[in-house]
Length: 583
Image 1 (cartoon, rainbow, N blue to C red):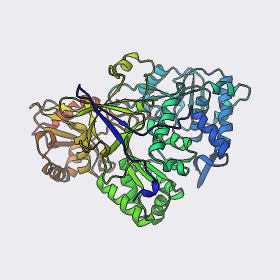
Image 2 (image 1 turned 45 degrees about the horizontal axis):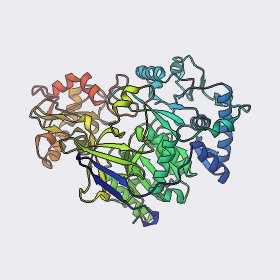
Image 3 (image 1 turned 90 degrees about the vertical axis):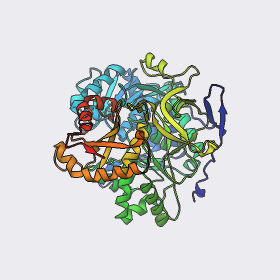
Image 4 (image 1 turned 120 degrees about the vertical axis):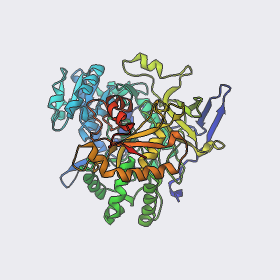
């Protein structure tokens, strides 16, 4: 049903080694790797100078920037950076915008490095310590922020700052931009991308031009339709994160597409803006997290125009961040056929900030979520059995990073003796007899724990199952039980879950019967103490980003939250606590 897309078939080579490890790699050759991000911009500014490259909302419509004008602005800003003598990292505090893109591309054009930072670090007072940490690690030469609310954050810096609408003040003309651009190549650093910090302080991944250009060539090889017609994205994913800022942004730039910056997101106060934007522009690819797709299908059920605009030109639906619930998947398929009469590729991939990000991609159609695919061309995966039946996944290839910025210790720790990056993630085969069926993500190795019986609990996989069971109630769950007899969960209620109260007993009572019934149904489908949820407790206060319980991307730092909320874990296992739900 997706034959019109001309997808590259999976062709995986497997090597079983004497030490028990397994190597997987693609049998497809890689080709067409650009030398730098500036080479992409030069090409499209020459080939399609009038085509829309970037757009952001302006009143009822869009403010657009064409490729030809973008190159002129980039070269002018690059000249200004050189004339100012900027020779260190450029810290960008504000979110997605045309100015953000122009400054980033200008820096990359002449071999300078940008550091996009999550807006929350600047706008949430309790998160200021995270921004101070980044400041001290990066030691920026210039700081930029556009928008309201950044004055307090900018006051933390002694280096020059650009704020508001002052980006035009940076433009110059006297510097030799061509000379600086000529020495930018694959090994030139382009960005310092901060990891999520969900298990430790954020690390700054030195991301080179070659890592990003290789990754786009790998994706284009596997998904030929991306090059067949210009990609159009309506996308909210933040550029401080590798997926929004490298994968999606560069997918547009590398292939001469258009990126319409969605100023909404899948939050109760902002999703209406996303719906409005999707009603205005038909994209060819839709990127989102599972909760975003779940909200979208509900909106499309009630809005024929939105549904027609969404599916009109759509080639691919791509979910990231977690497994897409099967109900959402099925509804998207049904809507696509009913509306457009053809099926987009519904897929996902796997990777990390350190892999630029895609290392594995499902580029054949499948029926059902959870499969992340096969290695991209020129990527080699090493799967190491950890003794419990799980496979620790490691990666090597030209899109994989070489070092963390100013952190030799953690750089050394994350590579094995063969130079493979130790990702900390686990995988399992969809079909052990057929590598072309791909891999399934099997959680984070570090999140697993043992019950007092010595039984291992695969917390990441169990968390996804519980979230599916508690759809509409839980925004997230924390799996508990290390050293105890039973598995239990702390529930982060969804946007409507607090019911106007912060009293934990009231929160619990409002939903306890529903939670109990749903967990009982989930337990009935499983067996064994490691997959049976025995207790639950609803949290009155959401994870605190300022205290490090959650990252700027919304990921929960499970270890830190459990440490700070040890009293809640105690309540979970207290048979006399009326708020604790016993299943």
